[in-house]
Length: 408
Ligand code: SF4
Image 1 (cartoon, rainbow, N blue to C red):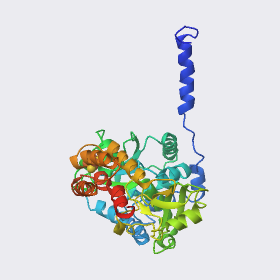
Image 2 (image 1 turned 120 degrees about the horizontal axis):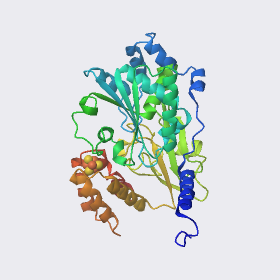
Image 3 (image 1 turned 30 degrees about the horizontal axis):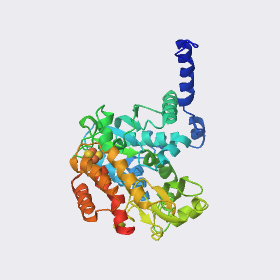
């Protein structure tokens, strides 16, 4: 039609513009706004901290007693990280990791879509604690609605006088998985290509623009106001099978009701599927699961009594990470799943170091063969673990090794 000039080019552009805008306009979530959050006592902890009713030490002690650990995946004790920052010289900065790129993980999105001010109060508390002059929120670009929500609520906070002296900058990620790695995120915030840095020095010593920088995950900050308000005992009162606190498990795969499940830390996969996800999908039999997204390894259904919490899965060569639990069934092939994950790492490798750049490529080629060359694959996996610069290359062989160990 366009070629025959039946419709004028300008009209075509108008129609296309309207179509594109309609197609990409993000649907805003129905979230709790500033007024509703404040009506429930929101920003009370921040105000106590700012007006001296609560000291920094008391707040840190509460979070330490709760035993809160980083929810981005590494699980580093939050209070210990804060204390380490306070020993560093000023000026200090805060960088919030909202890149949430681990396949299967959607919990940060869920917290921000439902209760953005719970998170923003956590940001302001952390900034106050370390006396940060600027806080950078690095949010993945795949969450366009959340960029609008956070920008809007920051405006509302400023108008209500809650920002105080803290400058908050909302930054866009650009779809690279590696930019969720903390030092690559710092590079990206600085406007450079997201290549992980060699450590040490660690970001708390030399972070953004060479300054000491606190890096906390979205969910970690979300829990701060609640833990301080309700007390460490409240947090410790949750938990199962030896776990303490709450975890937001992002469950996907062959379950009847997938999604983010707020559950006691330490639930087992059986408890998660049966109590929180309505069981398996009709016609599917549970055979295997990924306890921690793409990097956390694969376990058979027979190992269904392991508490899904920090420190519980390492002895099986797996880890919980950001608690992205992916459930497989008798209609999935675990070897195909492992190959798929290796292809993912091959694609997302930043290419900076040879063991990861070449290792993921070579491993994917070998895993695509009908018969796996086990000695060669094991040798390659060891080199990748030993010699890669960052966690991507070090953890990339995990699904492959899981298959070799438990699914022969
Ligand atoms: Fe980049 Fe992979 Fe090396 Fe990490 S391990 S620095 S992602 S090439």
